[in-house]
Image (tube, rainbow, N blue to C red; front, side, top):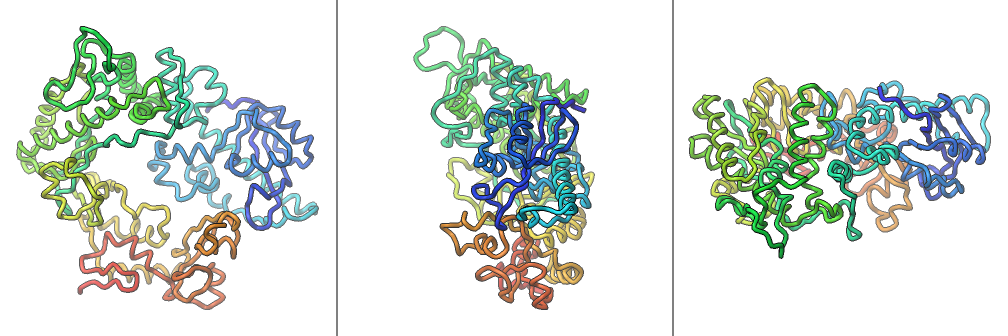
Length: 614
């Protein structure tokens, strides 16, 4: 367990508002906090006492404090800009995509970025704790009874406790980041507060003893957009069964940077008699790269990758840190803000070489008699028609050895991993993006007319694990009903090799489930204060905010015009019951849309009529 400094203060504000959470208008009622110095909770109302408590601590840690609490304190004349501030909401929201827990990637698991949902997902709080009922109107009263003050204390301390638990979890999760930064960065908790890209850049500069330099033009997120990305093929068919494999290049872009010495580019106008690499008459590149000595950055990436393999064997969290940096390195190579590592030409060559290597891999497997199903950036999906795994791996080795023979600094660590052995894989029809024909290979011209989507598919491994790639069924905005039908009723059948279902089957499931619980169709709507919709006062979010207030609401779409909305109406559960609506009055168009990938052919994709040929 990471030891927390005594100078940390967990804080949260309770405010008076008019039913809408608005940091520009809400007023401070209570400053709630927990001090690691005294190990006590405090509920403060006196301004001088609040300032004194803040001054006694170096770090202020809260949840969504940057957007809500800090502006309110500022209007109250309490300055905290000189403090080191940590907003846990911002950390989770920005980093969840790369954070893995036992159940999966955090971003995929979080249906909401609320404190309650995050702490429940991380098993830091149970549902009963989250169900604590509280009358927020208490904060609008001028004074409180003793019993009311007790309720306020329970509510505030409960939120502070959840924030404290989340902070301790976050500190533990990113503990391994510290050793890659300078002491000053660690002291100022930049291992938590900076973007992952900036963390990677800082780590490189520290390791190479470089002074950090940042461009005055642009921001951390300004990546060069005229560089083509990885090659993604069109799927070769709707479904394949048995003897299918996924092969994945190990850290493709970092290995390209190392093996081709992309950080050792000969700059225009430089005179030297050193050896160069320009693709070895095999790969097309724009830059000219030194072939006699690895650049310092390439040497560092090589060392880090080797360290990562060691850390992975001994289950050292530094493996996660290095993986995070390696996954980010391509992004900062293409971002002018990071001056010491930015190289537009090398960035273009990195993806250019990657596209050629994956195409070469497709070509060789095809020549050797394998069915090439699909490929995406650094991975290839094939079907082994010979049913001979060893032979397939021998072909893989042949490909790897050839690529190594064409680069100036081949690495033993460069290989392709057998990522998964698949018994069922399914692709889906949909609207395709326009694409330059130059980015297509000969198989793409054959497969494109099949109208199958790239990057949207499902597969089942031989050990019955289900992998879902980017399908809309994973969207957080989906109805609980769709998610329940998919998770509890469709997945077991998908694992058996069935992907399409009749409308009758789905309709019966819908009726059965809604008769038990209409809240399965309650849609989560998170809206801002009404004054934030000045330019769109008739929009659905504005209507929801005007009638029900800002914040999170769970509303049921209905066909009877109850509640708010134009075309489709949304009402609360209370309104649904008050107007004696039945489950047959629920608007199910969103459900049919969310499950459309799994409906048998013959479905008319129209919100008014979903008919299947019987």
